[in-house]
Image (cartoon, rainbow, N blue to C red; front, side, top):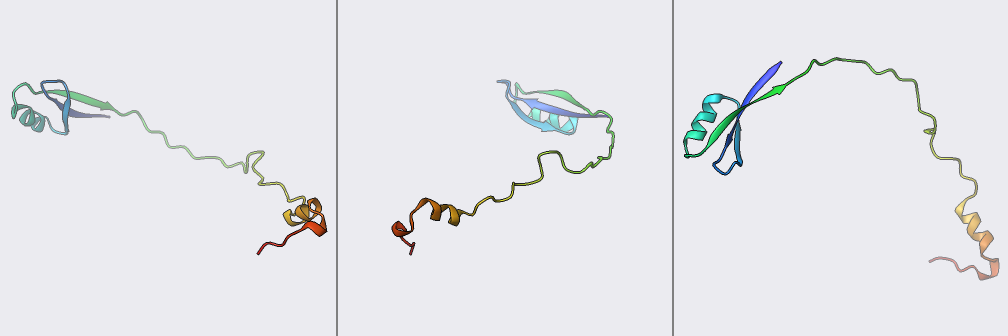
Length: 88
């Protein structure tokens, strides 16, 4: 499938606009001397529909490991009981 469009360029080579119809490109180019227009084509290839096959989860995506020790227990083990200051 082919789809054509036209680009209009100024005298300095900068693109001014893209037009879907050649008549619009000619009109826009004729408004100012030195403007040009060029035909462009979009080539669309054949589209193939496929279905995805789901095999389950990939290895390594079972989630986080189980907690080994709680944070509160770790803090109490590191700070001797007589030196602990409660948070307010």
